[in-house]
Amino acid sequence: MSFSAEVKAELTRIEIEKNCCMLAQLSAVLRMNGDLVIRRGNFGINFITENAALARQVLKLLKQQFKVSTEVVVTRSRRLKKNNRYQVRILPAAEVLPVVNSLRLLPGDDGRLENDLLLSPCCRRCFLRGVFMASGSVNKPEGDYHLEIITSNKNFADTILRVMKYFDLPVKLTDRKNEYIIYLKGGDYIINFLSVIGAHNALLKFENVRVVKQMRNQVNRLVNCETANLDKTVQAALRQVESINFLKSKEQYWCELTVALREAAELRLAYPDSTLSELVELNDSNISKSGLNHRLKKIERLAIELGMERK
Ligand SMILES: [Zn+2]
Image (cartoon, rainbow, N blue to C red; front, side):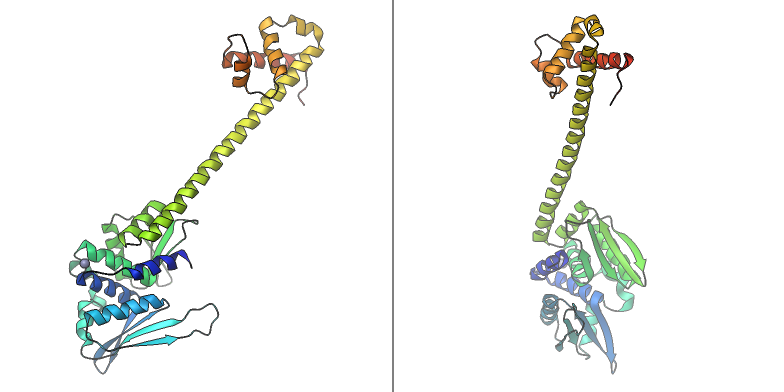
C-alpha cells in the first residue's frame, strides 16, 4: 500500500463527532470527486472514487445527514492495474436541492464556503481531510517531501489554498493542463498538515522515517569528513617519513639538524601511523602539537631544498 493510501485509510476510520464537521467533510469530498446531474428539473449527485472505504463513508454520512435515496454501482475496470470504481449516486429528486444547498455544491458557492460551512476551525480541518481523501497524495517519507491536492476548479483551488494558509501551511499553487495543483514541500509542514487533518499514525510513521533519514545523513557526513581527515593524516605522515629517510640518507645534513628537529624526526619514524596528537602524547618532552607540526614541516622543506623528489 502506498503511503498516500495508508494516510487515506486512516482518515476514513476517523469518527466525525459534530454535524458541522460532517457537512464540511462531505462538502469537500463531493466537490472534489462529485458531479451534479439534473434530470426533469431535479438535482442528483454522482460521486466516483476508487477508494471503497471512502465510498462507504460518503454513503454513511449522506444517510446520517439527509433523507435521500442512493444507489451504489461498482464498475470493474478492464484495464490492468486499474482499481474498481465505486459510484455513489444520489438519485435526482426534489429532496436533493436542500442537500446541494447545505453542502454548497453549486458552482457559485466556492467563494462563500469560509463564511458559513467553514466558520469553525473544527470544520476547516474536516474540510481539508475530505479534500485530501478525495484528491490528495503525499510521497512516502523515504522520498522527497511533497504533498499535493489536485482540482480542476480554480475557485475551489483558491479556497483550499486559503484554508491551508489559515493553518500556517506555506502552500503553493500551480496549474497544468486544466488542473490546479496545490502543493506543500518540507517535512515539517507535511507533518503539520497530517496533524491538522488528524492522520496521527501516519504522522508518527513519517516522523520516525524522517528521524532515521536525518541521522543517516548526519552519520554519512561525519564518516565522509573523518575519511577525508584520515586520508590527510596518512598522506602527511607518509611525506614526513619519506623526507626523514631522505635526510638520513644524506648523513652530513642529518648531523647538522638541530636536536629538536632530530627528536621530532625520530618520533615520527618510531610511530609512522600515529596522528600528531598521538605523537605529542607519546613524546616525553613538553612539545605542543603545533610545535611538533612546525618541526615536521621544516624537515619536509629541508628535504625538498636538498633535492628530494616527491614521489
Ligand atoms: Zn465543525
